[in-house]
Length: 122
Image 1 (tube, rainbow, N blue to C red):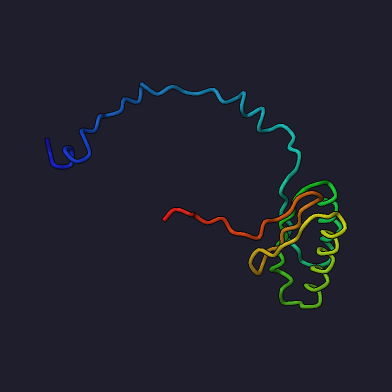
Image 2 (cartoon, rainbow, N blue to C red):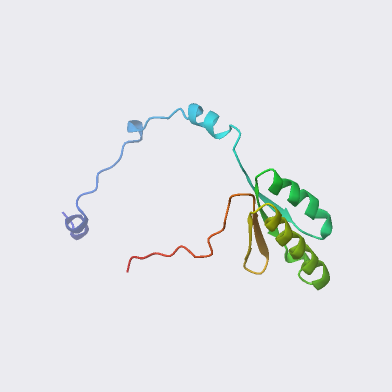
């Protein structure tokens, strides 16, 4: 018996024939059923995307808006952010920036926790 076997214990070879194929079709049917809400991603290149974002929020979906394309145009960026803030206020949802390139907008009854999840273990 080698040193590694003494430390870790003797390893046993696993026989592939011992494995069994699982039929997951019943779970796939549950997964493909209609969800109550979706997380949608929008690429904002101007004011043209705002009506579609509004529709998604009014439908109860969460929208992650990629605003990287309009960061260079301060006037458009300010207008888009103003419209999205107003939307979140109108539906009593929430809006928060995620880094410099993304904004998350939530529908009625959903709030975004601004505290980051961190490990408490030391």
